Length: 77
Image 1: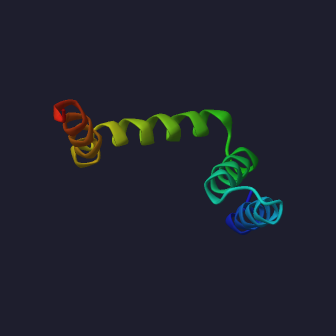
Image 2: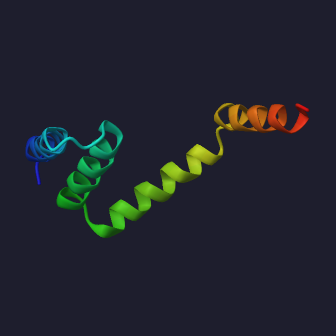
């Protein structure tokens, strides 16, 4: 499927969900999943998902924020 058709599907589903009063975060996730399923094979989807999950875990700067909040929560009386 071409990039143009995938972009149209992505924005159409996003607009439809926003029109149906769905929260923005849910609309982004669902429209991304629908666009990925309509344009990619299952093997490509799983490979990209695993690659993004691995790169997210390796990022220490993103991990430092929740750890700092947890440490603060544990040390307060």
